[in-house]
Image (cartoon, rainbow, N blue to C red; front, top):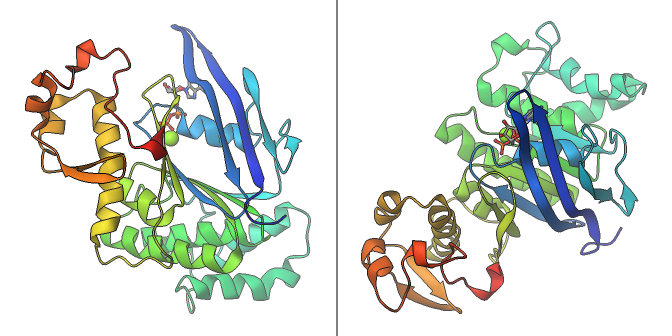
Length: 307
Ligand code: ADP
Ligand code: MG
């Protein structure tokens, strides 16, 4: 499938959970596409339905209404043509790193011997050369998560779903993993849906970032990140500017003016023009920009790309 065509289509997706305390509306009318070859991130507060969305796309859960399609086909059963990485590596303790990667092909009834060489190459590509025979308890958290990523990629799926894959790692390891993922995705021409709490990671890796509202999960904004690739960790003003736009959106959504006040030095892009923001409290009291409670949409004016 050529790059740029719709690969993942999410249309008016609703998921309601029945609980003893009543219904929990996790997702409420979510619609977006992921184009073939695109790296798209989803950021949103805890409980806004990100993992539910990943399960629905993978076909591990059925929607209450709406639909998900992959490559033009409605998802109505567990999908095999994708790789999933969760927050925890979930490795089998008695299998080596290599055998944990090969588990994926064994589960698919394929001949693991034929994939041995690719598995070794994948492990080497994420810096695990020489660690193939190690058991999980001999590996660091970051190494285990690298093994999990190799396991998700060994059958060369066109789509990679990552649900807070670096959530359990320290900051330095996260940085290195971010670079690793960038490298893997650049080589493999993968379509990636990356779920994260980290705005920095989302902006660093993505072509687009979707910001979700608190539960029930809806799309609040979609941001284009038009930075050249490959991207480097060294902080650059244009990357920060993208991060700040997303961060302001998230802060305004959170409705926490005190937190938002701490970010009063943020820049905001008004229609492509960068201007320095006054302190948020003052801005909210300004007659030209209505206070939040008077603003029925609950949103600040938004750059054209996030509408
Ligand atoms: P996130 O990944 O964004 O933190 P989740 O998708 O895990 O959010 O959960 C979204 C909401 O749905 C939460 O309120 C959660 O408690 C609820 N939820 C998720 N799975 C279930 C379930 N199996 N049964 C009941 N409620 C659930
Ligand atoms: Mg989650």
